[in-house]
Image (cartoon, rainbow, N blue to C red; front, side):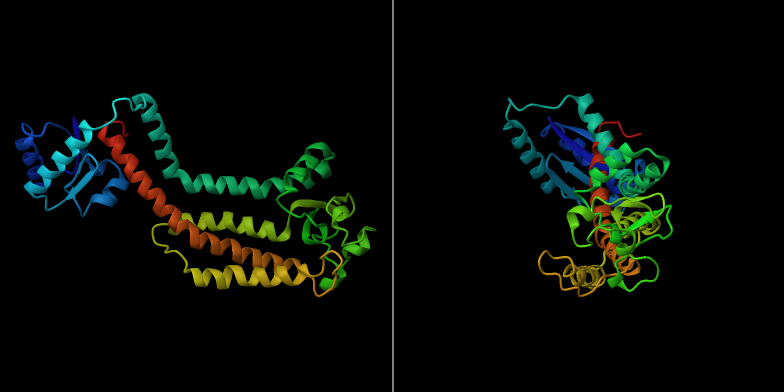
Length: 319
């Protein structure tokens, strides 16, 4: 039998008219009518407030004004489609379908919290490594360094240090005051295989398992996610050109220019960035990505949530 979903609300005269029209066609076009009150969920209300009555007749959607001829055509076509359905098609048990829909509905409602939590865990765990090294719990700390090693270069003169005399030990080439990496380590600074294994000691401190730029990128993504929660209904996506100008160009210039200093066999010693520049360019990159992507994610989640809410409401499972 055809399932017809009518999106309605109290006091909608046009909705009552559509319902009456369906009842008159019941004998010629047998169907099951399910009424969904759009006030049962904010997503439904936002989507259908200015559109009701809306009818979903099988795979077809009709909106006001709903003419009798169009309704008959939709009912006939939906009936033909139903009769031609493969009888061997496997259907998902109702309980399992309801559970999956409820799960997806919860994710679409809390996606920003989930994203922020995952980013916080990702950027926070590397700071646990130096804390553990300081406490003498080295084995779990080494695990963290190893886990993040494929994800970040972990070069110590481009990383933060905790519990030491300085928060960072850049190369002399960076022109910073204080001790340089060459002063605290006997390791050749451009021997990356050895440099990456250097984690520090109790005097100079212990290296964070993410470099300065990555800390800025993911830290700003987390902070940007929190800010997005305050303006998610009003913020429009950043233009791709502005994203490229603000997010890509500064980090590309800063990162590429210093890359020439560590290329094997081609050490030009052109320049070395500073912790401030890495933090600034990383922050611009992270925030611009939030501004570009999250409005689209919000729109997609809202659309998905609306569809799932409609299914749950139609089956009487929407709380």
